[in-house]
Amino acid sequence: MKRVLGLWDLVLLNITAIVGLRWISLAAAGGNTSILLWGMALVFFFIPQAFAVSELTSKYPGEGGIYIWVKEAFGDFHGFLAGWCYWTNNLVYFPNLLVYIAGISVFTMGSGYEAVGESKLYILLFSLSTLWIVMLFNILGMKLGRWVNNIGGLGTWLTGSILILFGIIAVIKYGAANPMTGSSFIGGIFTFDKLKFWAAMCFGFSGLELASLLAGEVRDPARNIPRAIVLSGIAIAVIYILGTVALRIALPGEQISIISGFLQGVAAVGTKLGMGWSVNLLALLITMGGIGGLMAWFTAAARLPFVAGVDRYLPQGFGKLHPKYGSPYIAILIQGVIASLFILMSFAGSTVEQAYTILLDTTLLVYFLPYAYMFLAYVILRRRDGHPPGKLTLPKNNALAGLLGLSGLLTTLIAIALSVIPDPETGSPLIFELKVVGGFLLFVLAGSIIFKTRAVNVPVQKSDHE
Image (cartoon, rainbow, N blue to C red; front, side, top):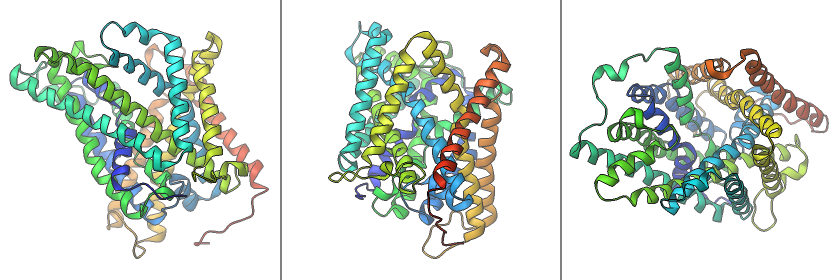
């Protein structure tokens, strides 16, 4: 594969893939305690994730990332299962991301077009056309496709920067819209609702492993991916934490929408400053960031069936590269078709739409499993391999590395446990459990059957450590 991604491509890819501006709205609507919760998510999940991904990428810098690491630590079946869960979760998630981008995009047209965002036809056409444009850029290869990521990363960074700037202007000129007392940051922080929200916020920080899935297309991945993690990690943490602070300063808590709060915040300050046009600009930047994020996740997800095809745990066609562009075009095309079907399901008649909703609910646990595998692999491979020469080991102290891996693992397990506890308004707890847990088991069973069926035709390949 062609190595075309450099350091700043990876920095912008991480920003556009990880920063979900909806998280800022959700956090700001949740009160000042969300600012402290962001800090806890940073310490207990984001930093351990950064250490784990940096070290594992340095030791195993091949295409496939988490698939390779888990396979190296636990064997082929577990590597395939981790990759399967990561891939299938993204396929179901794409329609949700596209609906969000479509809803924001109407604000770029100016006032009077908000009703367009309620049109199912507009959202459907926007979603399908955007998905297929992203798929086309993927087939043309990362030499061209990286610019979609880069523009998206710049759009996301500029959006966060504008929100923070407007928050500074608001507090200087008008004062904070919400009380910023010490007690407001810690009140009720250990309640069940806050704990569940904190576990969800941790996964607002997820995605640093994304670049490693593209390691075969990165120049000097063992060096550039860890450096990109440091640079993008600082930007991501600043956007989330200061963006939440800025929104709390700009708008009273009861007026913050959990969906478009950041647009409200900029609109409130921009209107006072005679800059009402800033909302349209921000909506354009958010749309760019969303499309860049879709490109990043779509690109990385397609590498999992590709490497599984190379290993022949999926049909070998998945492992083919385009003769001109060097992209895994078969895996990309199949992924695009499946994602399109999920988009159509989400807009079909009520029965099919309900089926898609159930499918979406089941991906909660599917999403968490690869992260549990990753943190376990980090701990186990550190104990097994130690400090090989020329490879990055972070931190050098084995006990501290074990503590970081355990922190990430426990955070993931807490999120898994909380995801199977239904909210009071969910309805029947039994039906919820059947959907979430039963659906998760069906995903795992499907992956297991595919692996077992294909494994009989795959020659045994021993690792260097056997």
